[in-house]
Image (cartoon, rainbow, N blue to C red; front, top):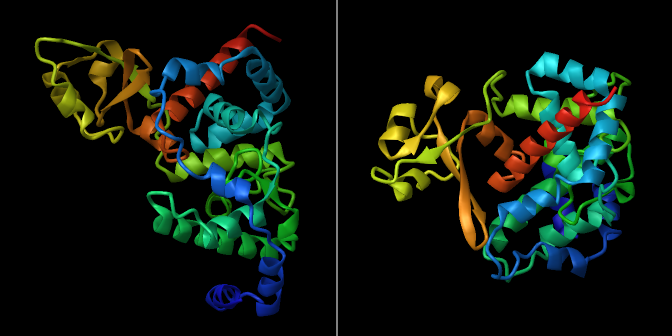
Length: 311
């Protein structure tokens, strides 16, 4: 129980309570299995990935969610500058608007990953430290809100609620958007909406800035390797971007901030490319994947289009 005592001392928590909570947690072999990276196999495929989220059931659920919470979405957009469509896209991709929030006991998941992280993982030590910090945040949240941590359920990685916030994100970015005196990301769509918007605001979302622009290539001047070196971190000015053979048109030519060339592989077919802005990069702070970011963007846009055609 030395680990429990260390947590209690470091976080100023009741030692007996921390011991009791951690003592009731169970190791989960399923969690340990799921956290391992997938075996090397088929290449990434944006078209296939996209099809998992832009499909009729999710679109219909998105329209229903938007119609039910239109007031909260408009308020979040007005107060933070984060588009309602992006908020709808995130919650739709994460949990299908609350239908799939995860059924793992969060305390079990986090103790497993904190103290028994699979050694086969290439970043085992780093990830174990991350989940120890998340376990501490879960215990702090539980005690502060007088909630039994054994009652919280979420993903195999410990993410919780409609927006799948990790405990540290809950502590830093979650807000009481429905102003009922408590933050509830499980059963309050308003709190989930406001918290997603607040998250992006904290990561420097720029109101009115597009997330990306179309891009094509001038094959005679193209230096694709140089364009891909920064990955999704916006680095190039419009001029330097085009000097390396990336061709922009229309509104993109007036863009004043940095750009990144975002590559989306399509299996055996040619990759897709877009010019990502700082706002595209902000979305990847929620989930560090360009495929995730594009799915969120396109789902939100598709739901918005469906909304335009329905009363």
